[in-house]
Structures are given as C-alpha cells and as structure tokens.
Length: 283
Image (cartoon, rainbow, N blue to C red):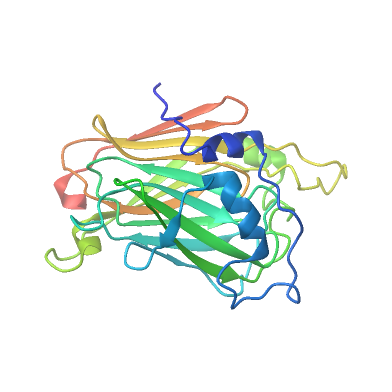
C-alpha cells in the first residue's frame, strides 16, 4: 500500500506529534468575535506556517459552519474552492480550530488533475473558536478564510458508541455518489459529488470511559488517500479534531470506467481499504 504521508509545511508532523496545544481555552467573554484575528491564532500562525505571509482567501476558498453548534462533537464544516488560470490550482488546505487541544485538525492534499471544488467534514470543537481554512496555491501563496463557532467540550464529549460496538465495525466504509448537475454553469456543478463514510471511534484521548472512569487512549484515522485509477484525488493527514465515524463529502472531476479507491491508516497501524466502480450512469 502506498501512502501519501508527505508533511506539508510541517503541519502534518505537528498533528502526529500532538505538539500544537492551545495556550488557554477561549470563553464567550474573552473572545472578541469581530476581531480579525484571535489572540490564540497569533501564536499558532508562526508554529504552523512560520513567517510566510497569509492573504485573505476571498474568491479562492470559502468556509461555512454553524455559528452555534448543535453538537460540539459533530460540527459540520463546508469548504468551497475556486481554481482558475488566474488564482492557480490549490495544492493543499490546512484546517485549523484555534482553541482545540491540537488545533491542526487536518491537512488535505489535492491531486494535480483532480479538480476538487468542494470538501466537507465534521469536527470536534472544544471551545468558542475560530475555524480556519488556509489554502496553498501552486504559486506557494497562502490564502485564509475563517468562521467563528460557538461550541464547548467537543473533544472530551463521550463517544456515541461503546468501545466494543465501535471495534466491531472498525474500518467499514460506505461511498455514496450524487448525480452530477447540468454542466456549463459554476465549476462545482461540473464535478461529481461523493460522500465517504468510515466507521471509526476516532478517540481523542480526552474522553472518559463512563464505566471505568479512565481516559480512553487516543485512536484515530491519521492517514487517508482517495484515488481514481492511478491518479490522486485527495489525501488527508488527520488529528483528534476529526469527529467520530469520519465523514467526507467532496466534489471532483471523476472519470467513468475507473474504480475509486480509498486507503486509510489509523494510529494503531490498522489499514482499511475500499474500492467502488464508477459507471457513467452514476456520474
């Protein structure tokens, strides 16, 4: 199995090592939602990107999330991307939750010809926090957009399933394909939309077993590769902020007659695979 584990600007290494720890939890009173940058972000920025300048991502990357989360352990995040000859192809996207214990939630790498225009997932949000998407284009410029989410306790919230139930279905995958919309309008409508669901507890290491009262060890999907044929669609280097039963919905330029392949690796070294044929009737 070939894994795309390349570290991007040191972010993935920081995820795996768990080195990005927030300075202090934000509260409703201390967090100024209207400020362009939260205080925590100022310290995180240099840890993740060094001295590299970051431009506003308007017109290149857009992020959407609920202003107040219904469930802090399962917060839906939607990212939309625009790539053209002027902006250049987006190579990577770093997803950051400022106030989480390990703020770098994931680093996504897109295939050169994948044409990814949309990516959605679900996150744990531990405190009132900015959630940021930082896209790197082919010219190595960084473009950021952010949204403020009011949530609390997502990283330590009890698991939805008990550990025995979670382990019984560990690594099972399901792929849902959404019919393409009529071509010729926005870039997103020319792509094929798919949803990948993986059964995995994605334990954060901060959750307590309700029976033993001991903390459940961290155990999560740390590597994910989605490809079609021999071409990469996207890969992910993930951390504890990805919610239980990881769920990814993405739009890309699919090709008929070639199988979609998914490979996942968790922190205990367990590998999971799935393959699905893509027929013209489903695209």
